[in-house]
Image (cartoon, rainbow, N blue to C red; front, side, top):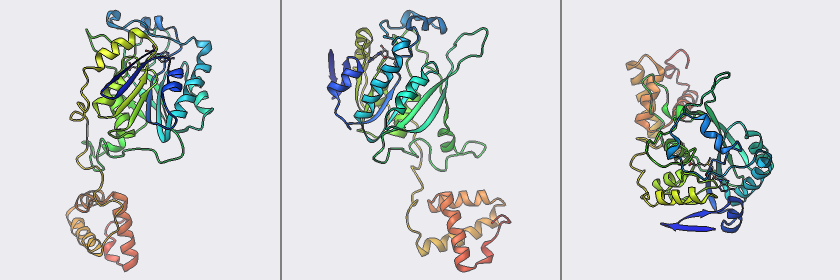
Length: 339
Ligand SMILES: C[S@@+](CC[C@H](N)C(=O)[O-])C[C@H]1O[C@@H](n2cnc3c(N)ncnc32)[C@H](O)[C@@H]1O
């Protein structure tokens, strides 16, 4: 077993089941992001994809199909143990072994949060059937504490597309369309996860300084992005060749280097959301509501403007208008026919 510690982050060239048992304390990890081997013949993977295999690092270790269920139970059990209460796990799985991974998860106390679909394109070739273009991402959490979910980490509450649709809502839909990265001329692992996908998971489900873990590091993409976003990291890779290649790459990563590049919203959340309404603020709401109704024909526009001016969420504003109307029996406040 080889272990390297770089900038305080730990990388083990070891089987993840023994590795976790020997090196990770119970309730110590904030977030696991992992992409286990697929349990299909590793060497035939190349036949499925249109790409130059000369730059793919050899040594990928596969799990025989008949051992996959038992293997999944063992590593998922370790993942459950090492996660903190409230900690989350994202497992990327193809459909071939989805049953085994779900079966393993079901045998633990981990709770499902979302079953995400990741739609990608990377040139899978078929002749007599439809083309497979998705993976499953199983997002689970350990019960016992509130989980981290940074609702406004990427898109603010009031950011819209050109048709007026909420960008925050769209970003949080459970089908993600993210393409594989092509890295011509660069040494890589067989199935590297895209930076964009890892960034999204890390932004929503972790904070700077959290401990992130990957049981199957492969091309070290999880540590690369996690460290780039100033998280701490610990992980395992069983193949020596793949591990050594990953170590070389990770030495070049500067902690925090990705922070400048990631999508971040103008406003994290409505600045007064959750605050008690003051009398002055209620008066301002009535005054501005009336004025804006003169200006705009659409209630939606009026509410959007009020959200900006008052720093409150849409539902909070609508609820307060209703309350004031009932409290004051203010019929004039009923301006739109659907009020
Ligand atoms: C699908 S790849 C991971 C790809 C990685 N997420 C990336 O973006 O490059 C799975 C990796 O798990 C490794 N592996 C297989 N069995 C393992 C085990 N028992 N413990 C740790 N790593 C293992 C394989 O060698 C392979 O590199």
